[in-house]
Length: 264
Image (cartoon, rainbow, N blue to C red):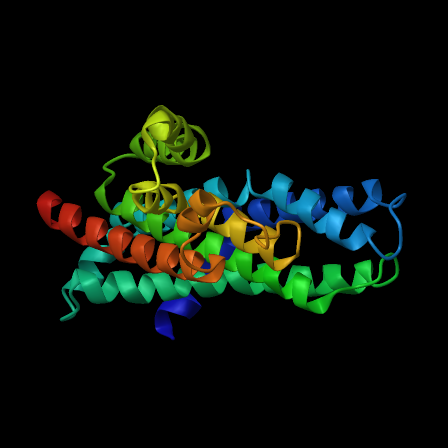
């Protein structure tokens, strides 16, 4: 609770969280106004997909920066040394700090999208299940990239390093990951397609997108080829859950390992 309250006070005084939330609010409102011409019964699904396709470019990099600078600030202000001298190890600090970051970022996000749902009620026929799937997708994406951000903040030694690492991570998941997989595509067969599937869904953006679009009925797997059946060897929800667990664990492990290397 102390870490959560500390994060609230620091982010209320700072500009990063409010800038991030303002960007999301502006994007959401602009997409809503652009969708006024859509039909009452089907326009809701089109709006949700369009909003997701736009907002997916901003949430990852904003969460990376918020997570990274939050950890780096503890080093810069020497508060990390004070916390670690009070019989608290870095693993415990990182877990509590992460919980504080989750709360500070997700609570305003959930409040805004609850307000947004009320605004949409006057324009479209709502599908509450589809909207919950949309919100859950944003939550998982935020958790993954916030935790990656804490790892970047743990092993970065300057603000310029944080900016460089953050842009690289963002660029990798948006562009490089898919280009690497495309180079292996000619060698994909029925025997190794599951391995290719694991590599594909290790990208959190692809796992989140597949979960959202299948959950909202945009994609259907009712008439799949044998190769596609092997590619989708489990439900999109399990791909999403596995992706969340893998990246949270990997980010925590990276933060702990490289932080010890630096001697903090």
